[in-house]
Length: 376
Image 1 (cartoon, rainbow, N blue to C red):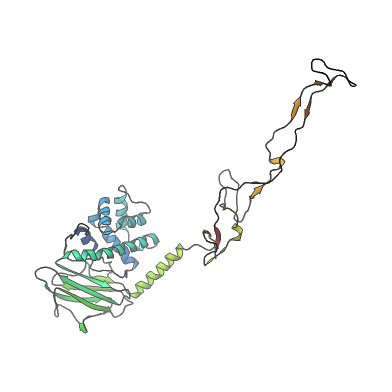
Image 2 (cartoon, rainbow, N blue to C red; image 1 turned 120 degrees about the vertical axis):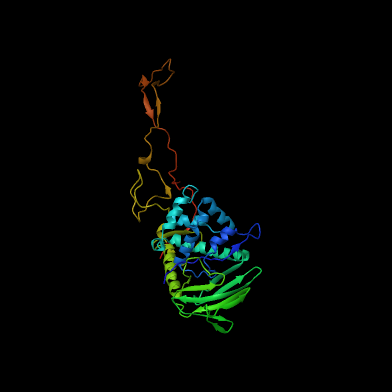
């Protein structure tokens, strides 16, 4: 079975109904695949290919085109391209990164968790825009609505205008058997047994082997549901859902802090899965390694002190003293008086008095206290 992602689509023309309506061009671009994923049942691959199909349409060749669809429908093409290209999208690099993304495939991009998440978000936004686009559709349109259980799905068809009568000429699937009902009656719809519709109709169907994906074909006298040239509309099975769930779990696990991570929390107790990091209590963190002109530090090293008393060795070399010249033992400088020793006192240095209490002083930088915890 040839697998191809489907986009939300409507068949027919669109007309803007108000100043705030999504433009007809945007609706045509966002809804041409024939499926309304209201329950987010798409697989990761389908989300990726959905986003790729939208981004790579000629309607979004320029940066301004992408801005327009973001403004009209809320679909952020820039986020998808940024996740793919690894850089912020600008008017200058938009075309180059877009072209690279359009040449890529899910197999090569599946390991990019950021891209998977951005295409998932884009797919959900497209689904939100679907309702507005449906309200604007004119003539014939139809779409398929899968459900979260991957088993049941609906097929909705409608024609607006003067002549609202048409026939559904085929409902079939490959990859798995399906059953569709009109009320309590099981239907077999084919070109030999067409189903007449006046106005609108909903078929309630289910996948008889919901583990398997299926390719749904719906044809009418007004045309098929789905993109032109595509074999059908792909509906994922539960096996796809399980695979995606495992991928998402792996992604979420990759976002969790690793064992041994140190975290600081603005609460008095460590959260679940964390233990108090007693070695960090009252200390600032320093990265292991050796910065330029700095001391080599290893994990577990400690150092520093909260208060410090200076030692004599730490003082900057300097002197203190009182120096005086010769002076007479008595009398005056001009008329020295003799005494028992006679003569003059010689030049000498005299010590100054002692001061200071030797109290340790604060050497701490400004700080804020948090609870240090380590991941179990």
